[in-house]
Amino acid sequence: MAQPVELILARQLASALAVPVLLVDARGDTLFYNEPAEPIFGRAFDEVDALPFEERAAALAPLTKDGDALPVQQLPGMISMRERRPVHATFHMHGLDGRLRPIEATAIPIESAGGHVLGTFVVLWQPDGGSRDRASPK
Amino acid sequence: MNVTIWGSRGSLASAGRGTVRYGGNTACVEVRTSPEAAILLDAGTGIRPAGIALADRDIAVHILLTHLHMDHILGLGFFRPLFEPGREVHVWGPPSTTRDLRARLSRYLSPPLFPVRIRDIAARLTLHDVPHGTWMIGNAIVAARAVIHPGPTVGYRIETPAGSLAYVPDHEPALGGLAHRGWLSGYDLARNVDVLLHDGQYSDAEYTERTGWGHSSVTHAARFADLAGARTLMLIHHDPDHDDETVDALVASARDVRQAGSVQGAREGDVIDLGESILTGSRSATSAG
Image 1 (spheres, chains in turn brown, orange):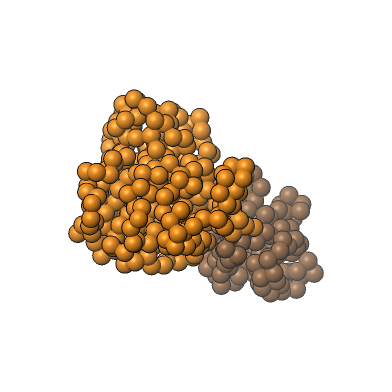
Image 2 (image 1 turned 90 degrees about the vertical axis):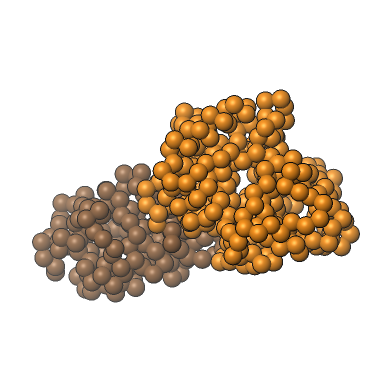
């Protein structure tokens, strides 16, 4: 089954942007991240097969700014879909290479004309341009 | 399942000596799967002669609009069954994010663009926002899906045990990529259909000049048909500036691209019979043009 057209267009837009973007479906599964986001996730998207929500949550193991574990349901993308509003947050996140990075993210819910939440479009950036990557958590 | 092409032109009606074979009326395709109901895909200027054929008959009419660009609704006000008191007519189409189909359609069917308002139409008219999922019209399973085209736009799939047809006349799948089925706009509609009526408005050169206008080159249409596994690709929505010879050449170039399955150009008056014919009464396969 093909993705809804809203997600197809969002993916196409993301692939054309120079800002890092993560595209997630309504379940929280990672559908796509673009080339500028690859340094943040620590691996090229094409090297990653399907990335279900549970696997992504475990691998990325997000932390608050203070270093406490951040429940995945409190990630901006998940809040944006749950509350149907844009959400901005600052936190730390592990890449798939195991490195911990400071992240800022703005998530915009993708809601269809029929009122269905299809996913979220998350713009990411590293506030220090990536210079403060840490090799180990906390 | 019987399919009649009442209008195959895109964008603007284009009557004239150069368009006699493929026709000048804009989009309207009739699908008959049972004697009790007629399905009309889009209400371009081709719906006027369709309405004459369906006038004064005890048949429910279901008009399925892909979107509300003028070439797809212009004929609605000239569809004879709409002015028959008590005639059962259903119009299905996509809502926008803020307006339902009735509100959107009323912008055309009201002064100053049209003298008769929707509420003054004599037929027993029901307007439906297309649902998610499938629904039944007579014995046909109908599905609508949003596809890539400017503004709220859907394509349709109609299926019976006798055959299947997909209708996606305004579609630019190349914007989403033509490589992976899972990311292919319109794929669920066209998957393994017997007949795919698909946008074939542009040559490759024209497409490069008009990328983002919501239409396909014939090369893209052929690649889409191959990815979807459609058996017959019928190119429709011919550009109003393309005469019959130009459309012939575009159809031939699409045939060169297709790797499996056939290609035809939809011609006004064509009647396609998928499975057992259900047409009864006066209209025959050769009288539609």
